[in-house]
Amino acid sequence: MKETIGILVKNHPGVLSRIAGLFTRRGYNIVSIAAGTTEDPKYTRITIVAEGDKRTLDQIVHQLNKQLDVIKVIVLGRDESVRRELALLKIEIKSGMERLEVMEIANAFRANIVDIGKKIITAEVTGPTEKVNAFISLMSEFGIKEIARTGKIALSRGPMSIREEKEDIEWEEE
Picture (cartoon, rainbow, N blue to C red):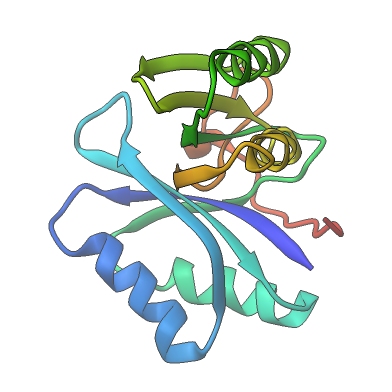
């Protein structure tokens, strides 16, 4: 099973490397990882999608909580969080008709066309991973030259922030 884990850490050089290294040393699989500073520049928020059985995921949370620079670790359940991913795609265009088709599909997905060239259109799509995957699948029919994806990011629903979140962990199948 896969689980999305939110981690609040002190914003120091090497913290992300130490967190990723913990996964490497223990043989845990990272499906995706994204990091960036928070509303307070003293802190970084890391979102990791990890894969494993319940015991492995419990162990991951336990090991993360033992790290010096880690402030808080929360599991972001599907129903209790808003999850998004961003992807940039370079799509090959062979004709004016294909250009229109790509733009229509992008519009249907509420994707943004961020660059247009004679033979390449670059599109940006955001949303749940399933939406991003569906957009990529449709665009692959035209020919994808290159893809860059952020990995999943997530926030808990409601007014509480990661620093105020409850401690109990409830795993769910994804």
